Length: 391
Image (cartoon, rainbow, N blue to C red):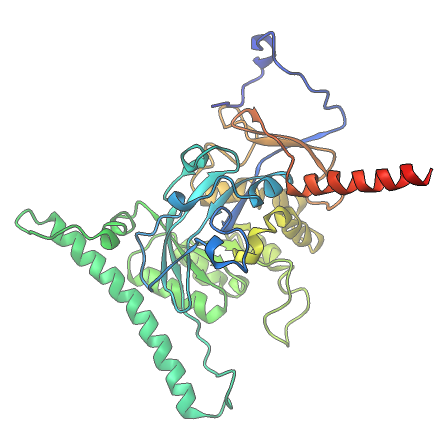
């Protein structure tokens, strides 16, 4: 494992070390995509390639790490733009509530064991929608509205029951006289109940966020992390009270309400920063976005263009996600003793025109070729041949 050295590194270099001329170039720590299904999906339209969903509503024992595909064609595309680590998260199907345990992986390795940085990182709860209207009927249909309210209440009850059952299981296992058999689902939640694992609650609207934070408080969940958090700037006081962090998704998107200003998503990061809420910027974490994780720096770039300080924008995809995920002692910045996971670029990585020229993971220089570069070479040759024939 390659770690970053101190000021005396030069005099200790081995004789055969490769030295690169980097005059005028820029070095940055590897970016971290903190909300992704990279490695669990390949082609969104092909069900056989989508491994991120487990059947059922309550799956706390589902582990993302063991399903990672190190040969995914999406991984080389992602790391070629400086994104060198991702938090890969299991998802829920329609109506799913507790998806399982995420894994932080480096985007280089022969096996998932090689790629593992930290697993599990935490438990992921998908808070149900508080939508109190039907897409298909009038908003004045009281009977339909009541059905929606009951459906929401039932889903919340299932989440609460899961935590209550896990707590009862934990208590029974501690009782030496108990003959309680091992239950993988509740066993996976023991560290959460003991405060040793982070709980990530996926919630976007203000009502969802407030309900999720209230749930965390009543269940003794310390320092929860809100994932998505489109309306997080509207819940600043609640977030501060709970010491919650936010993994902010979909910065480069449209407002979720017709009456909101066009730049509502763009300035969300700025508002969280000004309020002192710990946050980082990510993509949406959808299967579609798995093929577009390379665009992570441009999410931060959009926030910077709308008022977020530039240095904070860089930290929002490097140091801040490392802090939220509990690996700031290893990743997120270029400091002595940390993993040598960084990249060399010809400009600001938040700018679309910037190219990553080289990258290292744990001190290993990695190959930046991908399916994209292979296709470029293939069709460049076609154009060369046509030009040669014309001459």
